[in-house]
Every structure is written in C-alpha cells, then in structure tokens.
Length: 162
Length: 162
Image 1 (cartoon, rainbow over the protein chains, first blue to last red):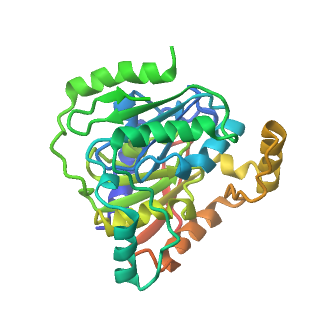
Image 2 (image 1 turned 90 degrees about the vertical axis):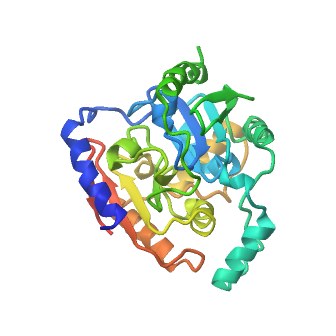
C-alpha cells in the first residue's frame, strides 16, 4: 500500500470527528509561522495550534527567502500581522553545502544545477537571526512583530533567539 | 501578549508530554507531503501523521514549483520516495490573479513586483493535476509514486484527483 492510500484510510477517522467546517479563510490568530519541513516537528502540537488559527509555511530549513511569496499573500490578502520563524536542532540543512548537493544532483541526474541555491546553513542560531532580519528588512513585508526560535527535536522545546 | 509568547506557553505543555526525542532525521514513512499553508488544514491530523514520519512542505496553494528545492533535499539527502500533493476547497489562491496582487503590493509598498509570480490558480482540480505533472516531468525529481488530492475544508475529507 502506498503512503497516499494510508493517508486516505487515516483521513476517514479524521472526517468522522471533524467539527470545524465553519471556519473563515483568514487565520484567526493573524499569524504566519515559517518552520522547517522536518518530519520530527508537528507545528500544531508544539505551538498549541488548532485548525483555523495560523498560516503554517514549511520548507527545507524554514528559510525566509523561500517563504516570501507565501508571506506576502498571507499579509496582503489574508490579514496576518505577526511572523514566527522556527528552525531546529539536528537540521538536515546543517549537514551539507550547496557545492556538495549540486554534485549529488549532477551525478544522479546528469543535469547541472549550479544556478540552484539550496539554502543550507552552518550556524543554527545565526540562520534564525538572518531569516528574521530578512523579513524585517524586506520592503515587501509589513512592519509587524517578527520573532525567531530554535526547536529542540530531543525534547520538543522552543527557545527564542531573535 | 504576542502570538509568539502564546506559543511559548503552549510549548511548555507539549514538552511535558514529549516522548519522541529519539527519532532519526530521515522521515520514517519516506514520504514528502506538499500542501497549502491554509490555517484550516492540520496535515498531521487530517492524514494520520505523527512526529518522525513525513516531510511536510507548506506554501500558499501547496504549489509544486515553490516546493522544488525542498523536494530535492527531501529525496536526495533524506530518502523520501513518494510525494503527495494536497490543495483544498475555498483556497485563497482562487480569489486573485497575479495582476491584482501585484497592484495591491505596488499600491501599499510603492515597489513594483511585476517580476513576481504569486502562483494563483482558477481551477482547483486542474491545479492539483498540473502540480503532480510538474513533479513527474521534472528531471530533478525522482521517478517515484506521486499522487494529488483535494482537501475539503468543510468536512476535512481528502479526495484523490491525480
């Protein structure tokens, strides 16, 4: 069975208890969370979110530049007025650099991706600070509260660093 | 209190019951989910995921092209071997076109974003099919099972369309 088929089975139980069909499109808590795609992070559980409350933008690393399109839509069309950036310990982005991943892709596909920025980082706390700064200094992003956290995958704890 | 501070308070309860500190970095179910950032969707709840199982990539619309960097990292470095794309009913991406949002941003910021693609769509089912196709035809993406679903925000149900 594919994982997609497992999702379909699991979804039946979700639908059976679902009672949130009345929620409006704009996030109730007017916040956008930018957080890594890492499998060990459940943003709703870790941050106390339920359906309808927050935009959750996830990508490899939880990088700000990669989330800019979504943040503009979140703010300009759907009214969010706060941004929370979350990176985490033991992140895959700490394990490689652009040159290495470009080499892997070139070797496995035959295609050059020398133009491609995979946005890895070597200093976790600095990456959070830089991504908070990216939003703060970007003219397309509203002047709203923006904070940055590190999520520890060993104990689930978030710690503010920016 | 900022929402970030509310997150800190909620996180205390999460940490108190957290028992998954031993999980490996690669997703246990070897799957990457590409799904919209919409506040009404809780991917873990809707698809039956717990910490450690899947990469969850989220952006405005759940668009494939915007998720490519993350998918390459997910597959080449962290071993995922299936992709599930999920868009949803009543999506914000159905409510505007590039010209309109470019106009809003220009008016509110003074900056021209005529180069910026916000990736809206006008046909929900077609957008899922196109995004599945985007991955299937992209030489940088592995030849793995890729399926596409529509999530109904009224009842939480997912329906396969690609």
